[in-house]
Image (cartoon, rainbow, N blue to C red):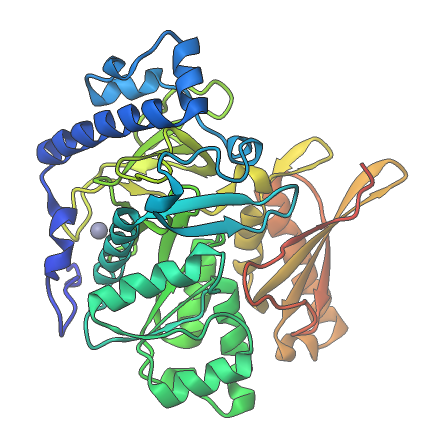
Length: 443
Ligand SMILES: [Zn+2]
């Protein structure tokens, strides 16, 4: 028998109503909004207009949703090339907020919001929280970074709009995080999955038993993570871990969110129009086929993004979800095309390694991948922490575990890697996005 997906003390939340719009009505709304946003970008964003003109297109080219495939793509370098304000469609007097990413390479990217955009953002974040069963009365411990990063303020506005109590603790200072979690009785936490692992790990030292806290829900995002990682987090902490998806270029967190079925994030399609394309050809992929997620903001006034290539690899599904939302879901994003490692000519994603490692008993969910080049040949070493019991075991037992991990990795990647078992807490912890790969190869 299927388990009921209704939360015991809060069934349907009225804010979720747009999630249940019948598909034909949703598509009507999408088309209206698409036409308006294409017109807006054409009128106010020089780069978009130029690309449309090069293709001999005007906004009238969009008469149906399928017509979107004629429109030009936008890519991350467009934001860098027009830094800081070149893609804005609103004058600064109408812009109420700027955010920026601290790019690891080159210039940061800047994104902008009008008052209306901020409201839409709060709305989708509110619907995100409601989708995983949170409501007024919940105490939300928001450990996403506040500041130029969109995570902190995005979650904050949504949680407040929902009527929940927000604790704007931001990231860092893990001891204080634990004290506040315990003393303020948070029922939900928002942060990156890797940071939550770090919090769980520190808990016993401060005499905090996570399982005894009222904490029951985690809203985790801002970095790719796997289903195996979810299982580890849930088993370690006794909470339910939900995957939230978003990116600053589109709005921030709140583009898609898992419902209580935990079956992949539902996209808030009334505001974000998704497509999946073949990364090489740019052609649309069929439902269920894996490719790059492309998103169009259907309402963003300050900075419309049309056919933005996210570099996130996933698949779309319109298979019905047990929650009843007709909103399509994306397969949980565990890899980005940017994260791909090429080693000895083989393409490998950190998420493949994560899954292969966590399959094996005795490992801890902390690992790092070190790439080096020796005598012209790429070498990969995977360092993984093991439980103190395993680490204190006989040499034979450690060798056996190492062997199992090598086999698991080779099966998943199709190539051999060195495995180094390390004591727990050897690998550096992150307070934001985890750094999984250290590439020491000289280019
Ligand atoms: Zn659902």
